[in-house]
Structure formats: structure tokens, C-alpha cells
Amino acid sequence: MPEIAEVARTVHFIRKLLVGKTLAKVTASEDAIVYGKVGTSAAEFEKHMSGKTVVDAGQQGKYFWMIMSSPPHPVMHFGMSGWLKFKSEHTYYYQPKKGEKQEEWPPRFLKFMLETKAENGEDAVEAAFVDMRRLARIRLVDCPGEEIRKNSPLKENGPDPVIDKDTFTVDWLKKKCNSKKVPIKAMLLDQANISGIGNWVGDEVLYNAKIHPEQYANTLQDEQIEQLHKSIHYVCTTSVELLADSDKFPADWLFKHRWQKGKKNASGALPNGQKIAFLTVGGRTSAVVPSVQKKTGPVAKDMDEAEFVDGADEAPKKAKKANGTKRKAVKEEDGEDDEQPKKKMPSRSKKAAQQENEDTEEEVMPKKTTPRGRKTQVKEAQEDTEEEVMPKKTTARGRKAQVKEEQEDKAEPMAKGHAKSPKRTKAPLKVEEEAEEEEEEKKPATPAKKATGRGKATKSAAPETAANVGRRRSGRRG
View 1: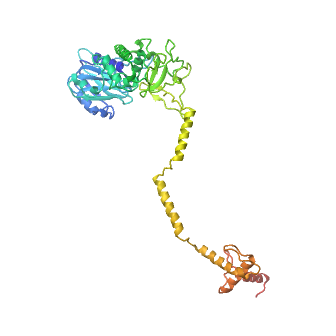
View 2 (view 1 turned 135 degrees about the horizontal axis):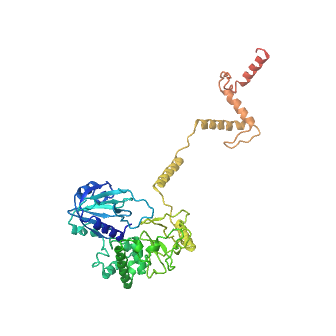
View 3 (view 1 turned 90 degrees about the vertical axis):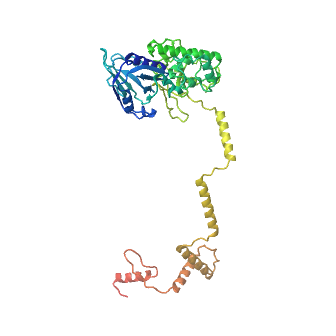
């Protein structure tokens, strides 16, 4: 992400190439996020910029603006990947590699393009605002040019440490630190506190001040805060004066070596051999040199020493969660993908105590009943009551079985030498046959059914049918 120095570089080129020029042509690409999120549109931008002259440019931290010949004025923020390019000059903060093809024009991911009039023998200047990730913001502020900083969003942000030196004093910083119970790195990243400090600037400042990024701001001693103020002023002023040209940064800066993480043949250390570690503070991956940045007070959490980048031939392995799944990498705003620090697992004794407490709770606490469970319990209670009160229903098949059992009970005393069997106990075979014969005698005679191919004759007609069949086979007639 462009920080205080990169934005200063953009303001430098606006003043060099656009100030004093009249905009002959303005084209803007509609974007409901880049424009719409801050209450404007591409059409409004075109309308209010066309034909105006660029009078000056300004900056507060990561915000910058152009002062036009009349309001409204465009106030812009690059977000993560935005930039203002010029056709006639390379303005990006890194130099193109040898043999790299010249970028096409108009460039990709265009949000607006400005073209000046060719005046006083000078060629027209073309500038293009681009943003691949659509996290940039372009708004119009309707006020006099000198009052832009008194309006939103600038008035909600803290002082710029380079421009607002009268405000950004040691006493001001002491009051700010003493009122913030957060890690010092998180405090520096919050633009409401100080404008312009991003991830790499924050790491550089804390390394220079020899302060651990996780230490709480309100625990810093006065001497540490005084050194922090000096480091903020030194790092921000130096990088702004060098227009974010990292090739010109001091050789002992952490910036020169922090980007080695994960690269092949990277030492993961400063030239003097001091190790560089990486941890997450304030939601951002921070580079820290533990041998220099000592903890002198309470910190957000203990740093995992395993995060040292020692590998000279391979990238650091990704940490795994306790359940074996891979941990997601933390996405860096400035493009680097760093791992989150490993979480310390509780010791076995703590686990055992925790399990013991859970077991005790299970014994004491009754089971929780969900709404669905309560309905089931009520339904079961009703069914139990019905079973006790209501007699059992008897099916047709059941009634036949009862009649048969009663007949068997009556037939049992008639059988000699046999004691009466308990209810629902089968009688001996002989008694059964006698009972059946007795039952058959009582029934009126019915004509025998003819045997068909699909079914057999009834039991009573079976002997007669068999005899008839025998006579037919022998050729005799009955």
C-alpha cells in the first residue's frame, strides 16, 4: 500500500507536470465503489474537472488532492494498489526491469484520465489514475482550496508527522500513547492517531526506536516515547525527501531486508547477522528484530520464536492448526503473504484439568432440553397415558385366534389323561383334531369348490376331489 512517502512522490509529480496546466479533456470510468462509496460518480468528476486549471496539490498522510481554479476539488486515496501514472514520465516508486516492455497507454484499470492543453510550446500532458483492486477512493470536496483539510475525511485523521511538526510534538505523542491501551504497532497504524504511517513505515520506526511492536502503548516510558518521536520524524522525513526511492534508503534500514521472507537463498537476517522474525500485530504482519526490540512491559501475546526465518534455501513452512488443516496465510496490504504466528497449545496438565471440569459439569448439570426435545417428551407422556387407559384394539385375525383358543380350552377336558393346559398353550395334536371335527359337524355343509389352475380345493372337498380324479384316471365312473 502506498504510504506517506509514496503519496509524497505523487504530489511531487503533480506539481511538476500538472500545476499551471488547464485540463482540455477529462474522461472517467464509472465505478460504484471507487466513486460511489464516497458519494460521487464518474460523470460528476468529468463535469467538474473539465476546463479547469490545476493550481496546486497537497497531502495529509495517505490522502492527496489537487486544488483547482474553482471548487469542488478532487481528494484521493490510493487504497492498496492505486497509482497516478503519467504518459511522459515513469513515476512509479520502483524502476522497471531491463528489457521490460513499455506499458500500454491508456493503461489498464483506468479510473480517470486527464489531458492538458498544449500551451507555450509545451506538449500536452496525460495522466491516468489506475486501481486494479478497486480499494482506492476518489471524491469531490466543495470548499475553498485552503480549507480542504478542515473537511471530511481529512479532519477525522491525525496529524501528518512531516507537515504538521507544530502539532506532532513529544508532549502530544506522550499524551496519545498514555491514553491508548493497545499494542504500539496498532496505534501507529491507526490513521485517526497519526496520518501516513503504514506497515513498512511502522516497522521501520519501531526498529529504529528499539521498541517491540506488541508492547502496549500506555506502558512505554517517557524516554522510549521521546525516542519513538525521533524515529517517526527521522523515518518519515527521510523517505519523503527521497520520494520513496528505496534504492536511496540507508543501508541499515529494515526495509532493505524485510522483503526477503520466503525468497530462495534469503538469509532472513540483517547484514550484521541479527535475525528477522515475523508476527501479526494489529491484523498486520510485522517484521521485528528480537535481539534489538526487547519487551520492557506487558505485550499483547508472547512471540513464537519459531517464526524466525532461518531457511537459506527454502521458504518457511506453513503452520498447521491443531486439527491438521492448513492455516490461511495473512494477506499483506503491500503484496507479501506472510504466515500468522503459531498459537501456543495448552499443556497436558491444563487439558486434563479442563476435561475434569467438563466431566464434573456433566454430572451436576441436567441435560438441556431443546424445544423439539420438549415436544417429544410431551408426546411420549400422552402415549403412555393412552396405553394405560385405552384397551388394546383387536384385529380380525386376533379375534379368530381368541375363538380358536377358547375352543381349544373347552376341548381339553374331553381328552382323557391330559391336564388342562394354561391359556394360550397349544393342546396335544389328538385333542386339536377332535375339536376340529366337532367344529366341522356344527357347520352347515357347503358345496365343494372346484380346483382351478391357480388355487387348490378347500380342505373339506379334498378327499372327494381326489377320489373323482382317481376314478377318471382308471376309466371308471362312480
